[in-house]
Amino acid sequence: MGENVEKQQKQKLALLSNVNMNLVIRMLRKQAEVYEAEGYGNELGILMNPSSSYHAFEPDITFLVEDLMELLEHDLEPETAVEKMDRWFACLESALLAKEIYYIGDAYLRGPELPAADRGRKTALEGLWQKRLEAFCKAHGNVRILPCHHMIETLGEENAFSPKMWYMGRILLSNEAQKRLCELILDKVRIEYRIPKKVLLLDLDNTLWGGLAGENEHTPVLLSEEYVGLAYKNLQRLLWQMQRQGVLLGIVSKNNEQDALEILEKHPHMVLRPGAFAARRVNWAPKHENIRDIARELNLGLDSFVFWDDSPAERQLVKEMLPQVEVPDFPDKPEDLAPAMAEIFREYFEKPFITEEDREKTAQYAAISERMRLQESAGSFEDYLRELKIVVRRVEPKKHAERLLQMMNKTNQFNLTTRRYTQAQIAEILEDPDRCVYLYNVADRFGDNGITAALIADCRGEVPVVTDFVMSCRIMGRNIEDALVEDVEKDMRGRGWNRLRAMYVPTAKNVPVSGLYKRLGYAEVEAAGGNGVLYEIGLAKTPERRYDVRMDETQG
Image (cartoon, rainbow, N blue to C red):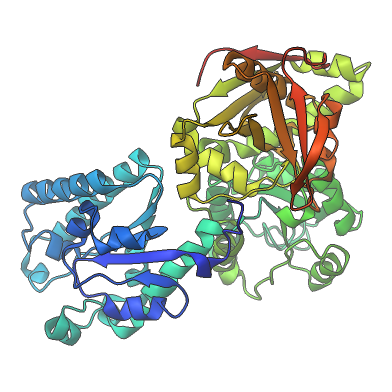
């Protein structure tokens, strides 16, 4: 436990298919440890047989790339196609292991009989597979879609397939397509284990729109459904989709705020209205100072930010003053805006899965400003907490395993031990009767913060130990942690324990919680290894803590 799971070369991969993928496997082996099946076409049998060499290999991620025409046995009737697809997915479902991750390729139907088939048959059959695949991924949190169809479309059908290689050895893809498939698989492995950025900060003039705000008589704003204006509008459409994937958007612009708001609020072709942005700094202050200010407001580290601006001078200044912030290049031509942003999304923000918390993130962070205003107007900190009306509810960890994994691997500041976990390790913990996992949803008068806190206790020894305690930065500073620790202590007493231990391992980023356990009445008992400290408290009588949190006893 706790090893750095971002190191791709440590991952064990498997590529299974109903066609020959040996060349792709050889390419993958140059950068990863890869399982090699005995032949091809028995991928479901390999998965369903617990004694197979595949299970002995124990891959971390399995990629299933199916040729849909072979799977359908060249039967293009929709009714029988649905039966074959359902049978395939049912067999796969019986073989899924909670501790592993699976990627299944979407379909690109190709075969010699298609030109003579009914018009639209290809699209219909691909759509049936896609619909079944999306439902399967929704039902299983450890299954993802591998976008093979887009890869083939981008390359072009004539370049993606090789009839000669197909007839010689059932090798479906051309050499170039096999290289692209290898790159796609390795990119998904990278995304699976990296920590994505959280916030994209954007300039306005000549970035979100063409031209300058407030100078319409000289340089009219370019934002429309025609010509160059369409390039800017399409960029905004892409940014809107990114926001739906959990990317926080912010504005950092040197402008008169009223001129900028006039466009944001009233321009008929604006896709991103003011509510789309979690934070805004529209003024004449240096941009690096505004970025620091936003980081403080959102309670995020500077390494969570990406800054995009058309001005080379502004980009260079931010690079020099804030080296933790990523500053990608800006394209020279408006028509390249959306493609450049798509690459930024893939490089910095793309996630292997999207949780409900991701979808609600903009509203959750936008509410931070409301809470700050309440704190400024409150007579005291106690009054502020009382007026927030904080409610904490414990939720079922197994129902939210993806969010638990996400929190463990993304949280840095309020993270007492900064252990990182694979999906397999989280699945193992959730099934272990000697591990207690506490997962919490936090809400207040300004809205639902979502699932934002988690603790894991190891009860295998003589005294249970809280090995992990993480809390989202957006709920820090409200003494919520006091209520959570008391909830765990109460549960441990109910389980018959009279003592509880907790671990703290210092890192460069978790200094804010260095004195947490001591403040809560725990006594230091010994060094925990790796520069860590082990604390202990008696559960018969714990100290009184000051917080204003209502515990909702209903389970989620």
